[in-house]
Every structure is written in C-alpha cells, then in structure tokens.
Image 1 (cartoon, rainbow over the protein chains, first blue to last red):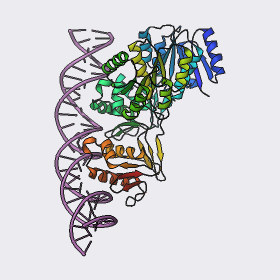
Image 2 (image 1 turned 30 degrees about the vertical axis):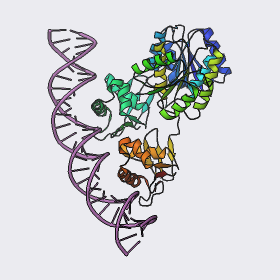
Image 3 (image 1 turned 60 degrees about the vertical axis):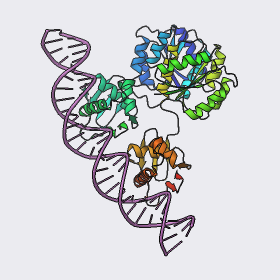
Image 4 (image 1 turned 90 degrees about the vertical axis):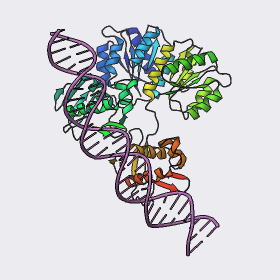
Length: 224
Length: 224
DNA sequence: CGCGGTCTTGACGCGATCCTGACGCCGGCC
DNA sequence: GGCCGGCGTCAGGATCGCGTCAAGACCGCG
C-alpha cells in the first residue's frame, strides 16, 4: 500500500491522522518539524506528503522548496489560514492541494485518493548517479569524481529539470518554460549556451556528450 | 498554451471564467450543458476541464463518469455545495480537485496551474512493442533489438501518429495534417519519402515491410 | 564606487535535416 | 498491349538547428 509522510507539530492532530490513515490502509511516517520532514522524505520514500504549514522551525513553504527539487510525488498542504493569497503561494510553491483546518477526515482521504490515483511521475530519488558524476537534488550539490562542482542558479535549474526524468526526452519548450518562464518558450539559444556550460563542467569529453545528449529539433535527454 | 474546457450553465460565471482564463494565457472552450461538455471534450482535446456540478440536463457526476473512461487529463469541479460527502463523491468519481462557490479567481488559477503542472505526464500506455522494435512514446525513444535509434523530428511525429492507433488504418490526409499541418494535405510524396526512411531504420527487411504497411490509395497501417 | 560573477545577446561555421525533382516499378484500366 | 496513377527509391541543394566563442549588460557585494 501507499506510504504517507505526515508533517505536523500538533501531537493530537498527528495522532488522529496516523490512526485514520492506518485505518484506511496507508503506511504512516510522522515528522514533527521541517528538518525532520526533509530527512524522513529522503529516507522513507513516501508516495505522498501531508504537510502542515505551521511548523516550529521552518516555514512550510521552505519545506516545500526543499522538497520539490527532487520529490516528485504529490504534496497536500494543511493550514489554518484560509486566505486565498496563502493558498496561491503554497500551490505555486509546489503543493498539489490545499486544505484548511478544521477539515473533514473523509474529504482529506478522498483528496489523498485523488492525488495518488494520478500516480507519481518519475522516481523520487534525491540523488542521481552516473558513471562520471552524481547529482544530489536534495542537497543541491553536484560532484564530479567525488569533487564538488559549483553551478550557477540557471545551470542548476536546467540540470535538475533534465535529471528529474532520466532517460526521458525533455522538450526544449518544457525546459525553457520551467527554467526561464513561459515567456521564453522560443529562446532556444539559451539552451545551447547553458547546455554547453553544463557539459564543460560535467562531461568527461564535452565535445562528445555521453550523459547530456541532444535530440536535434526536439530537446535534450539525460541518460545515466 | 493550454486549452481549458469550461462547463457551466451560468452565463455570467462562464463569461467571467472565460475572460480570466484568457487573460492568464489559456485557450478557452465553453460548454453550457453536460451533452455539450462531452461533445467538446471529445472534439477540442482540452488539457484540463473545469466542471460545474449544477447543470440543466445531466448531473455533474454523470458528466464525470462519461468523461473519465477516456479523458486522461485533470478535472476540476466547481460546486455550490460545501458538504463533504458531496466532495468525496465527486473526487472518488474521478475529479482531481473540488472548489466550492463562491471562490477566489486567484485560487482557482493556482489550482489549475498545480493540476497542469502534474498532468503533463499522462498515465497513458506509453510503450508499444513489436517483435523487432519498441516505441516509448513518453520517453520519445525507439529501440531496435534493444539499441536506441535516432529519429528526426519529422520521422518521430509520423511514427507516433501511426503507432497511436495500432492495427488501425491511418489515412494519408490525417497523417499529413497532423505532421505537416492542414496546408499540406495533398503532399502525399512526403509520406512516401519519410515512410521509406522509417522502414530503413526500423524494419528488419525494409523492402518487405512487416510493421509499417502501405494500404494503396488509402494510407498506412502499423501492425504490432 | 569598483569588482567579480552571472546572464543575455550576437556572430559564425558546420553538420543534419527537409524539401524537391527524377526515375523505375507495379497493378489496374481502357 | 499500352496508358496511367500510385508507390518506392535515390540524390542533391537550400535551409535550419546546433555548438562555440566572445563581448556587453546586469546584479549583488564589498
């Protein structure tokens, strides 16, 4: 059955969620603060995360930001704040659903079912390894032959988008849209420049790319 | 940009949605009752459906039931009913999100963005296998005897169109229209050239095609 | 204010890709 | 038997996309 990571600092609510989710057939992992949430998400490989925004250490959106670069599964946010600007912020930060407290357990379960039905696209591995370099999506770090390499923010965003779907071709439009925004859909030149830089930093032989391959006219493909 | 099918019988709300969605960069298709909704969903190929449950002819859940067997994209349900049993029913009937009226437009847009962000990778059956080669539609990769083969964009578009309806005859007009555009309906020569190239790359014996067959005067057929 | 790093933009050469025309083959039809 | 339309095959030239380099714009920081 599916594994759920519940992130909530209220022991009473956490306990209620654990019992309800167990009864519904889920395996439950608990975390009571943001740091633990990120740790558990990386080690327990949950299929879905239920995240309370009101945490003692980190802001909920920070947890989302730490999760999203590498965690592909759905995230359902719980919050006491019903203001729509809060909802928009959380949803745009990567949440898949937003439920305001107090909430009905039946509805929460139904929303979880809906999220899980859609299926997690791609592996949620926080670290991707190749024969020559490794990409740690959770720690935002790349190492070549064990040596850390510095990437600029743009280079990182581009690499993360490619690495998140290994073996799959990623269209140039999708890359441009997720790295530069929807207005830059046609600036394919950017891709050429930054792919070149990434290859120079990561590929054993930048002139004959092994891991960051070009599919002319369509996009790029990361092959581990 | 993405296409949204809006199903609502309230002209005022429909108009507001159309204006807002247009402004947000979406292409909008409207339907004012359930029958029209099913028709438009089939013909317009929307990326996402916004469905009001209160319709004059059909119950909203019936529309959902009619949609779900073949429509893979996300469906966002609008409803005046805030009762959680209604929400559960709609979500379990195949809805991906449920928003109660009155709602905030910004929130609706954020929820649509969240749905589309996830929905780009549909749960289709993306791999087609034959005795000699395999076509992975999601990864955009073709392998012959396990070895990846490079296809040009045109070759890929043509092959994908054929492979999407296995065993079925695909007319030349349909192929030309979907690969080159409506203006090229008569350029049957293109088909001959590119089918030839595909056969050379994929068929065991290109001069005696087994998988990419010609139906003289009609079109082509892919037989797994 | 200066400085280092990063992002954008332009120019250029090269190879791949697309279109186009020519030719031969085959089967149906007159 | 000859004609004709449709198909397969091949090759070459125009065009497009890609990689590469470098210079200018921009930004945050000291």
